[in-house]
Structure formats: C-alpha cells, structure tokens
Image 1 (cartoon, rainbow, N blue to C red):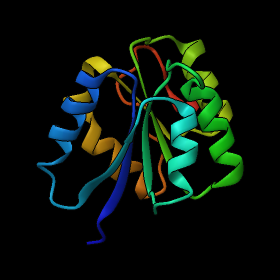
Image 2 (image 1 turned 90 degrees about the vertical axis):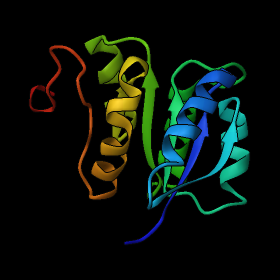
Image 3 (image 1 turned 135 degrees about the vertical axis):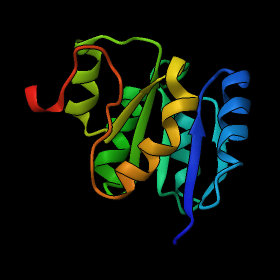
Image 4 (image 1 turned 180 degrees about the horizontal axis):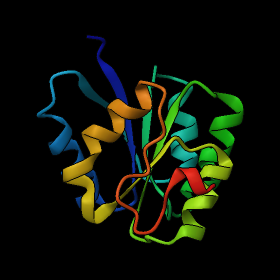
Length: 138
C-alpha cells in the first residue's frame, strides 16, 4: 500500500502536536511537514510532494478556506481535509464550494481523521459527523 504524504496546517501548536502524534501510529500515513498559516502551506507545497493537506479553517495571514481555494486551482490533485470547530452547514457548504474533499470537526479528530484520509485518497468525499449535513443535499 502506498504511503500517503500529509502536510498539517494549524496555527495552534497543540493541535499540530496532537494530529502529528495521532498519525504517527498509522502504518501508511506519513506527516512530511507542518505550517502555521495558509501562506506557509502554499510555500511548502512547491518544495515537497503532498498527497493530503489537513488544514485549519481559521489561521492568520491566510485562512484555510482561501488557501484551499488557491491550492485546488493550482494543484487539483492534492486532497484537502479541513479541520474546524464549527459544525455549521453554511461553513461546510463553503468548503465544498472551494473543492475541499473533506472536513473533520476538531472535537472528532482522533475518531475520524484516519478514515477521512483514506476516504479522500480513494476518491470519495468525507464530511463525517457534521450534524444534519449530508452530501446528498448539496
């Protein structure tokens, strides 16, 4: 099975550490870098081969939604999973509109992140356990 190269992006060090630790226990997922804002993400993806970016929606300098929108235009093969604290349909529709393949609530990261990564890598969307949200209603 191919190793999945993951880039993490969040302005919160604790979140970066927790997600990195969580993914370090998976056999075919490798964290290859970290970024603190969307601008850093854009800079990093030009230097390394990334399969999936796991990115916070709210970051300084350039937020995750803006960054994801740019990446989907410039590098459409990179899969994007947004991390958010906001389980609102309107927020989720914005992620779908810009082309993010998935979204995981930060409160559910440990339970869902590995599933989300494998889902988007297999060509599916993953919007997990966001209350009252179904892809079929989009």
